[in-house]
Length: 224
Ligand code: NAP
Image (cartoon, rainbow, N blue to C red; front, side, top):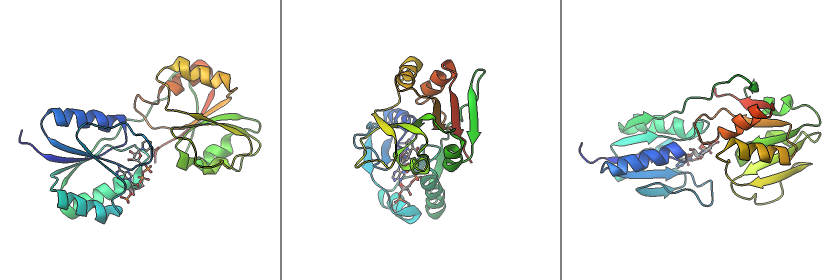
């Protein structure tokens, strides 16, 4: 196959695997990252970091750099960049490929309570719960009104200032790769509920196995 200039919209483990494969095939690959984490895992090929300035900005970048393929391998809850990719593809004629992870499916033993929004997830917590929030930092706000609950909040990078929760602690780091490690974390902090989104993919699944093994209720925010 002829060498192609390919832009991957990334920020996921799948995007990194894709970049590695396409670079190994001899293509000229650039991965775009939003710049949300301080020390992101770097994919193979070239990397650019930061927003484009909307769909128009992305279209201008595609034209300027002469890309012939655009691959959206972003997180399934990153809606805005995916909408921009569709518009930019229509504006430029650059072919768009969408890589969407399948959602996780409930298994025997799971105690899932599916909800449609962060607000619904916050309302679903019973008073006195100790909730483990496995969400990005931009998704915490809805829970700050629940001063009758305690929150254990996992974050990749330390927060820049105090978080507006009455009772909380921050666990720094990425999701653990094994269910036993996740279960130990839940037990050590007296977690009674897990709150997460139905992101799909292998990287964040260990927490759901841990919750199943501990018979913990999971308030799971489903995709649109
Ligand atoms: P979003 O709401 O869809 O995007 C908000 C804005 O951030 C976009 O309009 C765009 O700015 C910029 N942006 C997002 N992804 C970008 C990328 N790959 N390269 C350049 N600019 C990007 O996205 P989000 O939910 O904040 O997620 C940001 C990134 O983190 C995504 O790339 C996603 O793959 C990754 N991520 C997200 C989650 C999550 O829970 N949402 C989890 C893991 C990883 P402009 O309009 O200025 O171009």
